[in-house]
Image (cartoon, rainbow, N blue to C red; front, side, top):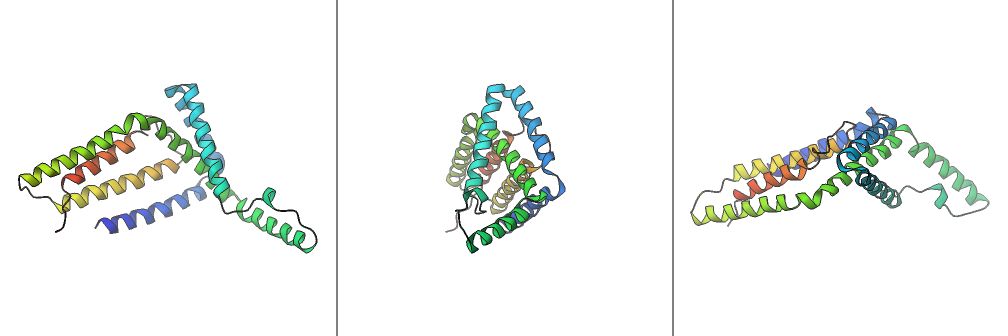
Length: 207
């Protein structure tokens, strides 16, 4: 059940993430980024908002450098036939990757990077909660085992499946051009940590 849920959820997430750039122009993602930067600057302060935006730009630049798509400025100088082939390849790359869809993907990744930067800003305060939930679930599982109480595989599968669905829904929300309140971002690790901690309580080890 868990494997089927994971496969179906990931496939649905992939389809939806690839569909979103075709439904919205790049200007829509950039407008949403400006809105969320303003909200973050009001909530966290201007310095923190600028730091998160800078971190998002750094992640975007790192992703661009790791991209296998060649850039015209990186091409080596050549003459004769090689120069003609290079110009033709550059023209093909320009037509293929400089269309509205790929520009929307670039803007989508920038928006998602900014939201990830917001999550990283929360992480020092939130990291203890998922760890505490997992430890609590592990201790409850030990107590149940000592008392010879039944560990329910069905409940374990249910909570793990809910954690998978929550993770996929969170990734989808990170790429959608909708306004997310700064307080909605930290709910992601809290909810996932709570579900996983609850799942650990009913983890059934096969003998």
